[in-house]
Length: 319
Ligand code: SF4
Image (cartoon, rainbow, N blue to C red; front, side, top):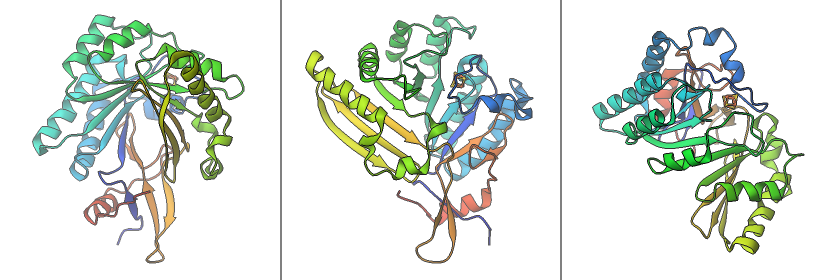
């Protein structure tokens, strides 16, 4: 009936919302920066843009009322007012359906945003029942004028915080830098990431992820923690999907270190085992700053009716 056939995760694809507020940075590995320099960002920052996002979010919420939502940018904290509107909207639609979304906010919490630290702390406190986790970017070599680590520690007293760190570039990173970084954020879960822009299906197919230079540096850094800090590795788990490979290290101090490797696109085509159909496996649905819905980062068309059909037929994909 519909040309596009989807499969997705059990609670539905993650909804990634590009907030209509840019950041003032230019990280060399940024996947999103170009989003804010084209015509799609022309209405950025306006109330009209936020309302267009609400309209699209509401449509998707009706189909998957408990999926994960990621607010990304740009810089979500560049407008506390705008971010507050979005979080309140998520809470309102969830209350109506008696459901709950997990809500993650990707932020670099730069010094450039005008709000002072008390305002940000008050804001996070106010919305702590809606925010599941703040994913705060901190990199071994900083590309952003950052707020202090002690401020991040204050935020952690209010809500969950995970540190996200792009290991950029492979040639300038080593195990000692990673060790120092884990020590710097010793009470936090840390997700190290490969530069997505350079990840190919070949990387993911590589059965022995240990051949990855960055993974070997993380392994060595964790060994160093055991020798110098009495923090040992409790377990190591590999999680593979068609689009990503993750390694999850549990340390004896209770913290997790992750290594995340994913493709620079989200939608994967797979042939059906039952018939001749080709399915698009959806991991992320993207709401752009202008409210448009796409089924990938690169403006791939999204078909709401096919998605409704996919969910109502429980066309889930476990990989
Ligand atoms: S702070 Fe984030 S959104 Fe801004 S340029 Fe860096 S990676 Fe991109």
